[in-house]
Image (cartoon, rainbow, N blue to C red; front, top):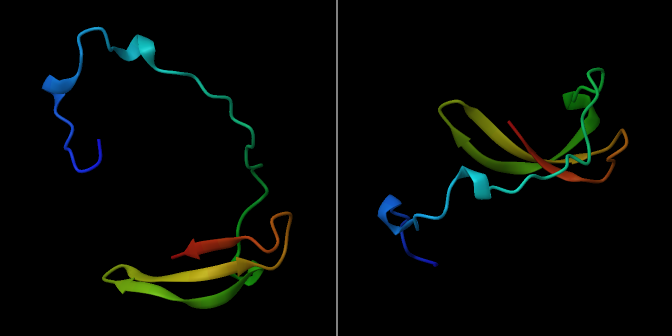
Length: 72
């Protein structure tokens, strides 16, 4: 359905909230596990807007070391 907008009239009558699937949560962040800017290496600026800059960063400390994130 690429390029087509969804319209409520397109929904078939047999579709309802009952047909929604449940998923299991595989990972939950612990309360004490907080991100800190010192845990990241700045790679580049992705963009800038009226609410601040968004950076591409790499995690350098912690369990997910090496993962790439966007940080505001």
